[in-house]
Length: 120
Image (cartoon, rainbow, N blue to C red; front, side, top):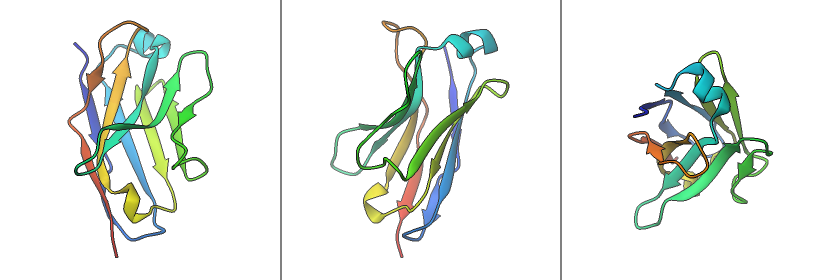
């Protein structure tokens, strides 16, 4: 069972920046080989949607709405994935969830979620 611990959410004004962090309890070897790890978000009254994900052997995947504003990265030594969010807009307001899937057909693991609110 993998546990994901998120941090970095908060309140920011439009045009501001935040960095989310997600640290996995997975061991370093498994984390290095993990199939997918990234971020989803869910706004009130909406379905959970992919924001950005690192897929093994592929380029990072981004939602069209965040391309050129958000950047996903990972630090293997720290077993952590980051989401740098720039030029935040009110429509980015949501609960952001960290996600990990160790193998392509394995179970999905989720963090508890961190609130991001963009408001003046």
